[in-house]
Image (cartoon, rainbow, N blue to C red; front, top):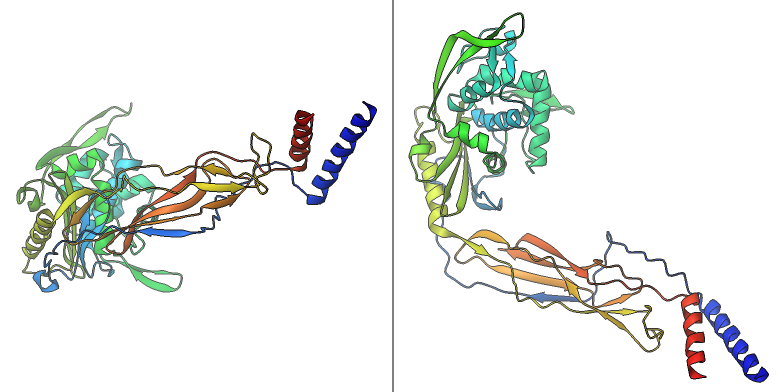
Length: 440
């Protein structure tokens, strides 16, 4: 018995020396989610081979810049100089309206300043010192495009026009509109110096489409812009703060003729200045498909009708050529991942005799987009197939990327299912002793 005990102690000490010599670290888990380095790559390509349509030629449109956008996915379906910055006139007011809805209360009372009352035509002709309900002014803003109303709204929301313009530009960046710079809430032509460079009030057709796609998600925005006529009056308050109807009444009518031109027309806003020319941004929904059209520089007097011609041409192009499809590949097979140097229930070291195999997965979700015949869908799967412990549950080991006509439209991270701790000298010593005792 004494000899056996001595042997046990000797073996345990020998195992401890081996562990220390091998310099095993403790079993603390650490995962670097930010800097995943992909190993083996594999590409799965799936193409739809169908005949393409001829599309719209640039000479088919009057507009200097035009864009047709999938209002659901945000994908540009067509553009003609769609990324060129131009003055955009009163189409600016869709941004003014949506910010008023998000930052104001429609029952707020707006007091008109002398500056707002002095705006050039088109005017509601409000007077300095008068008060109006914010919700009423939004109808004036969007139905008849009153410039004095726009400034009054801006001053109410942000205190002054410059602060409101900063809010407009902040919102534009939030929506991914990086070629947009607003100076006025009404879209009147303006320039100012920024970081030593002169910039003008303007946007691109593509950015303007993005802004409208955001606006139509707001039910109040749709309600206002779809109203045909609206009547309201100024407000007066007595010494006790009670509000009552004033003596001035107004009736405004919607100037967006597109609302009655095509079935499914949702919203829109016209605009004109000498620099911008005729401009328009509008939205349409039909058979579950949402299209946004933006036009800049679409003729000058006497060519008011050009914008309606271009809008209908682009909307009909979208309706006739694009269908909603789910591009997600539900049959894609993902690799398993082999993990070395991880702890196992058997107590064996993986780098000697046993590997741990983990499943991988992605968070499945549909990719519903408007797609036309001839567009190619490509799925690229990249993932590591070997890891070294420690491994964290949901550690990113690759990606499944979807491309449509060469542009990435969706990327799904590939995750590991389960975690694995790294072997250390305490674990190795414990399991060496355990195996020795079991052999006795």
